[in-house]
Image (cartoon, rainbow, N blue to C red):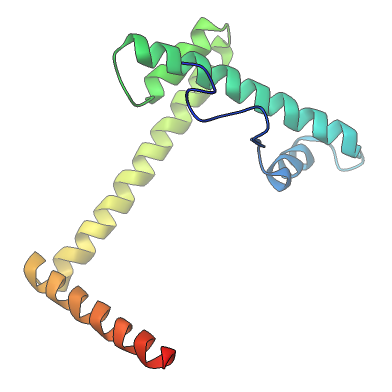
Amino acid sequence: MSDNERGVNDNDEIGLPRATVNKLIQEILPEDIVCAKDTKDLIAECCKEFITLISSEANEICEKDAKKTISPEHITAALKQLGFDDYIEEVEGVNRVHKAQAKQENQKRKNKMDQSGLTQDELAAQQELLFAASKARFDAGQS
């Protein structure tokens, strides 16, 4: 699938947030080293190219697997296929941490629901009342 088929054209500005790239550069460099703006821009461009390369390869692997969603396994397979084996262990570690955090957040959400003592229907009714009250306040402010 080409970029144009996915709704991406060359004029679209796709990239990493400049503040994020600058922060990473500052964290990596010693305090007594300053990085020129042109160098930061080049690093950001290289990061963008790396991400594009990995995601394109992962997308091809995903399509070969007849899947519609790129999974972490597709990313690690892309890294391996492109010769970035050294990154796989860290990527898998970050993925494990992410899954654990997501599981913990889901558990907190579930516990909060359980502790409310209300059924799903009662919660839905409360939500409808909140929506109605909000709409009434909004409508009152419009006149």
